[in-house]
Amino acid sequence: MQRALRRVVKRKGAMIGLGLITAFILLAVFAPMVAPYDPIGTSWALVRKPPSMAHWFGTDDLGRDVLSRVIYGGRASLLAGAISVGIALSIGVPVGMLSGYRGGFIDALISRITDAMLACPFLILAIALAAFLGPSLGNAMIAIGISATPIFVRLTRGEVMNVKIEEYIDAARSVGDSNLRIALVHILPNIMPALLVQATLSVAAAIIAEASLSFLGLGQQPPYPSWGSMLNAAQRFLTNAPWMAIWPGLTIFLVVLSLNLLGDGLRDALDPQNDR
Image (cartoon, rainbow, N blue to C red):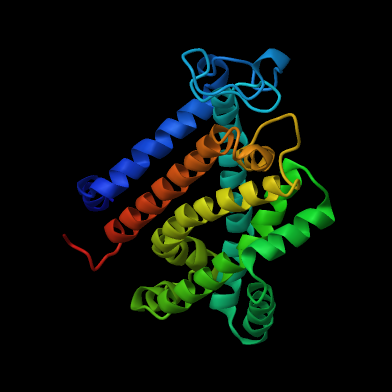
């Protein structure tokens, strides 16, 4: 772990990504102290005002401060990304370990269900589930988490099948370790690097999915802000008030780019064959 940490620190892209993600998380956590205005407070005298010293990012179609809404919108978007991936991990990892370790009929059944879910594009499946559950941020998190689960099932299964044939697994069986102990103590720690990298990249995909669902009205509901719902409101004013779309769109771009940079850095640093 110390060698991996040193390798991560040496990668400028990963450190830039980590710094940006940390900054966005801090802004979201301390939003009440950082945001200059009430994110849902309207003012008809400030409708679609361009960026100024009073309102750095301008105001929207209801006179709300765009900077404050971007900061508070980070709470919904980042929380959706983290919780959605948490749901996918909590379901996908145990199911994938069961499939890869036991094999046989259980593996075949789980693999066919996973293949069926992967046959449907991730975002289309998330939209269908969110529409079925109803429009809300919580339901959007569940829909995104379920849609991302097959990715972790497939990854975990493959990693378990590679690890379970190692000699130290045979040694654990020879000393009488139970299947549960072998799975939790010997297999799971050795597949964690791959899961950690995939989780980092999946958070980026989940943030985009949450923004898409909010844009379609299936995520965070008005008047509470999220980056996707802000883009939905801005689409009618792209000519007269482009700043309404520029800032939430730029924020989504930076967050997703940062997570991908961090994920790539972690992938290189946690690769046991990479000794640089």
